[in-house]
Length: 91
Image 1 (tube, rainbow, N blue to C red):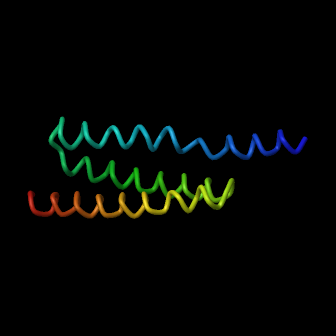
Image 2 (spheres, one colour):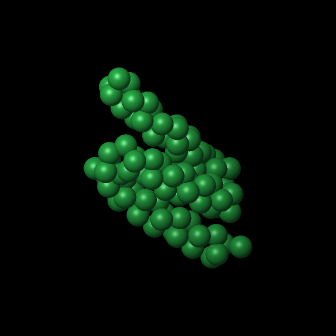
C-alpha cells in the first residue's frame, strides 16, 4: 500500500514538467524564428511561473529534487531579465 501511495505522489510532480519542456523549446522559436522579443518575454514569464510550480511540486515529493531545481529558476530569472533588456532597448 505504501508503495502505491509513493508512486501516486511522484506522478503528481510530473504535471508541470512537460509544460516546462514545451515552453523551453518555444522560446527559441519565438525569439529567433519569429523575431519577436516581446512575445518571447511573455513566454519566458510563463516558463518562470511554470518552473516555480514545478519546483514546489518537486519539494513535496523529495526535498533534494526541489533544491536541484533552484539554480535553474535563478537562470530563468536572469534570462528573463536579459530578454526584458532586449525588449526595452529595441522598441
